[in-house]
Image 1 (cartoon, rainbow, N blue to C red):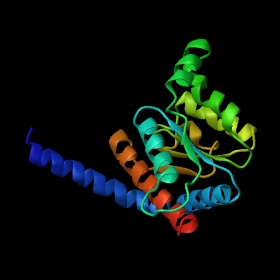
Image 2 (cartoon, helix red, strand yellow):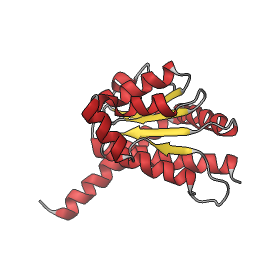
Image 3 (cartoon, rainbow, N blue to C red):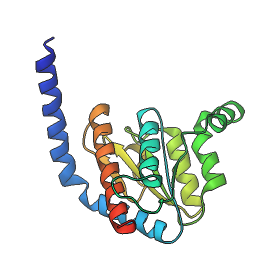
Length: 191
């Protein structure tokens, strides 16, 4: 394998995914930005969660809002449910790994909070359970997914679905959309 050719192919696939995503997610992105703006202006928070690379994205995006993305200003209320190893391991051990996010939603969510579940397949059982728990408790259940949206379709409003079957491309778009969301929220709430 020629690494230069391989990298060129990766860029071409990325560019194709960017172009397809740009045309498909604009309305859902605007809905997500509006829901997050309303929540933050009302004294609510944004709660991110996901597994693996999506867990890293959840932490990353929560940090951008609490600390800053580009603009200095007040901290914006956000947290990631992926960071407390004691809660994650205790819940997995005492209940089920499928409950790790729903249990935290039960404890931390207040009506009007926005939850953003992140799953490249849209089928992660623990993400689905947390979205259901959020809806049951008066939260705004939203999500970032890929492929065909999976079982997150119908659970999230809005659901941003990346039109790709390649996990790496989906994750690249999730972080691009996450950064854009942080930028919009900063411009609306920190400027």
